[in-house]
Image 1: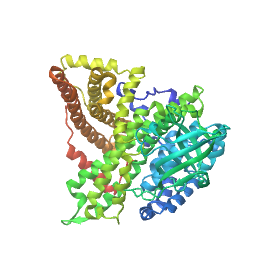
Image 2: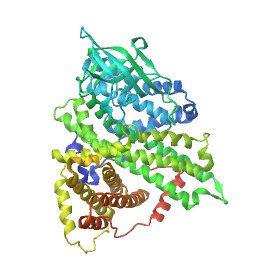
Image 3: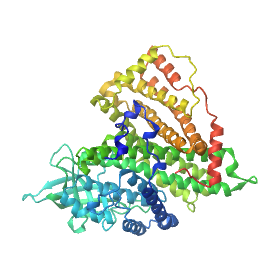
Image 4: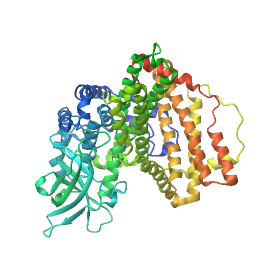
Length: 603
């Protein structure tokens, strides 16, 4: 275990809500080591050379070019970043795998989907759950790009309810193989993959089972036509039909009935990686939009000089900065947790599984927040381009279409919102996160007389950090009262859970951003971080406004009479600024920097 890990407290998943984090204990993009910076640079060069400069080919459904780019990425080692060295990969840490996923995914959603499906759900289940024989046989080919992987979970009647699949696996009389029959849909990479990770039910088992199935058309495997999709045009997406496909018993993945667990853990990793995959897309859209706004003359001036455009540019840049801050904070938490588990004697497989599972709440938060930021950014990109943004001759239109799938991938954002709150409550029930104590303290505070002392907010972010602590009290007040009122039936009150989740999301994203900027201001100076300080303040202002809205929505939905009045008073108290930021000035400051740099330069 590294000294860095042992010298700081690593919060468990969800504990950010009830424990303070020191800015020195968060990882930021500015903490990348030289090896990681070189990896980022080589990834950017590959994307600019082979993907960004040919984005039109991806819009024309050039599936062969997507496959060729994947093979080229394999030759550069980019498909094996997360694969252990023993199986032909580079064996890099979780932060490095996030970094490559981030910077390789921004040019087009078609390649991003192919890359994510292959390196994540197409390869990872074998590296994390496979036997030694399975890993030796398949993983080196997947890491090099000789073979490509796909993941067959979704069925016509089994989407969000993944464990309800009807695909069957029947053991042969001699016990040597299973015959798999069923239909899978929305299978990314189906058109050029070499193997499938397939989930099927054996007899009447409660849970599905995973299998490694080689793609052999002569073994009862047929593919549907390429799907006609809104976006990701050159991502091969097909239905896959299995008709008594014979799979050797030794190709069962993990244990019988363990498929649902494999699927859920794969989704946890997929969620945080999807968030990372939305970051460089935002950077590139901001770059194109700012260049266009600098060049586009209307009323004898570049349109970037207009306040309405500055507001858009500032919000786009701020959302990207916020996403970076939270993604890399969580990635390092996962990497550190993996290191701790390995030091305690866990295998790499077990350490990585448990390390990611620990932060499943954060993974869901990031998936929702960053995918929605990306959609907002591409939408505003089109708006800045005006009529040209609506034209398929500019990359704005395709970026907007491609990013729409991110809110559906890896569990819809609605599912992930409810998961975040549901998993937090379960962690509290197990004693992993103490919500009861802090929630009780908030209730007592509401009954007491508020302090009228003038706080000292002279230090950088003093008021912002105080506000974030109070936003946490809003969540504890709302969620605590809701759990007390509904108990286990809370999951049936989905609109209430969605509102609570939005509060939780805003807290994590805002805190991550302030901590990143505070850390960098301490080492680089306030002046060097003036724009980042402005983005942190602007984001928190927006977060507070959303918490007010969602907090009120939640409170009036389940509380009445005196309880409702007291909670609404608490909401007002906990979201009150002493010194409101000048939002227009902050946006102008941010936008002017982006305009001067002709793009996003904060990573």
